[in-house]
Length: 253
Image 1 (cartoon, rainbow, N blue to C red):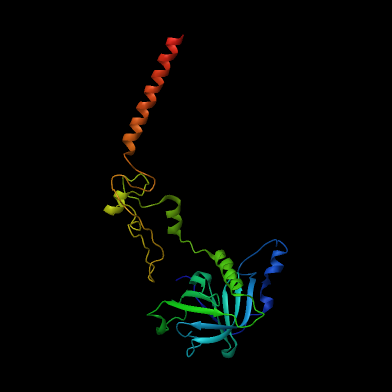
Image 2: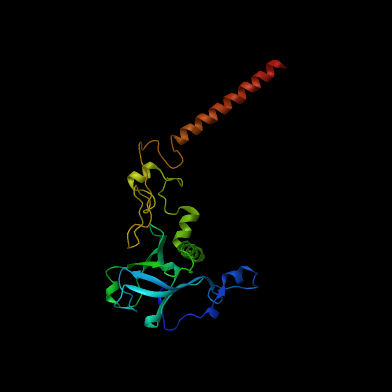
């Protein structure tokens, strides 16, 4: 994958970031997410639980760490081991507030977390939960909102996705750009369009489109029911209406 989780050997310095409040107070002449990272949230001594040990801390699945949510990365620094990781937002496939509202749950693509580490070969998704232990810390909602804001700065749209958005490329010949019940049933059109259009990314379905087809002759996205015949009938009706109006005009004059 193009985005890799990196190991860091020193704790991030506050001077490396621009505080969010300071950034919002003025408009810089130029700005770069990499050169001028904005610190959205910092929390110290957070409780971090992982579904499998981090390669940097191989013997623990529960650790205490400092959380830095910046516009560039999610950074976790582990003081007890003098090591940390920076996680690109493109590697975070899911983040949510867990039931009960006491922690934030993340799913992270761990492929490439540490190159050549066999413990990650069989399970490419790592689960991670963050709980804030200190009373004066930001809230879990603050943590979730900061992750959402920063993730939105790094939307991972591939070239192929952009083409699909622009023109629904790959529709079958004769479909006129429409997704129809006929093409769904017969398998014509884009290979990714089906009755259960789940896109497999290697880790399970990323999204699904469910279509209930009652009648292949009359169902489509946007109603494709006798389209050409209806158009001919509409044209004939319009011509008859015009002729009637002309005849009426001649009689009254």
